[in-house]
Image (cartoon, rainbow, N blue to C red; front, side, top):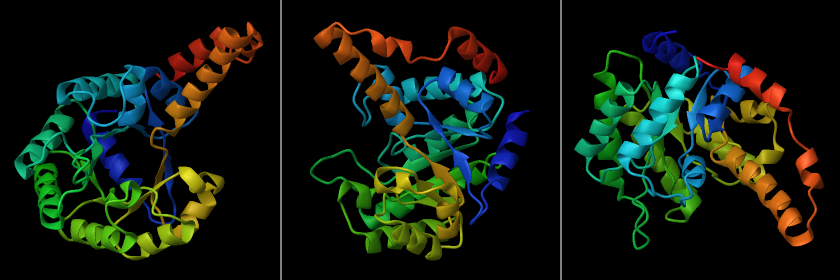
Length: 276
């Protein structure tokens, strides 16, 4: 499937009330396994990938490093790949627009852009600049030859920069300037997520994280979301397993945790089945 077909398919998958699962993979190997077990599309995760490189989350990697990683992910699988591109690696709207163009050049069919500054003193962009950044990203996406899906994130609720009312005000403004998908990570409860979905007409991304992991796909569907991502959740789960087994080995000399594995043969099979 070429990029154009993948982009069209990905855009069409966004149906409010009938969400598809968009799992975030930390590496090409994970992406292939996810495709092998039935994922119709995969996304990158900035935190998950940073962890694999021995780095903390939050612009630890350069724009070029992230684009190289995204290209590796695209080449690994024959399903649409969307990317977590943090704040676009730019403060100004023109820089964000350039990031959209570069994302398409490496084969991505969509991405998320958030309104965080990564500045502890002022963690979220002011409303007007946040909207201008998304407007520029939309203009760049619409100028492409493919149906590139731009998901605009209002992260201030999650990081404590503003409340849910402000988050909703922002995604409504993002919708007005043409964002194809809206996203408020961890808005609170499932009722809060339903309120987010009801506040806009465009598709909404729901994040299965925190207290929301106890809910099923059907619950997210009833809330009205169009897609469900997991952020760095899979990566953190894998890190937890490695940490627990490492403690057993180093602290107790106990290697029994290594018995709880998937066979090499099964891994090889999945990697072959999920390859591009």
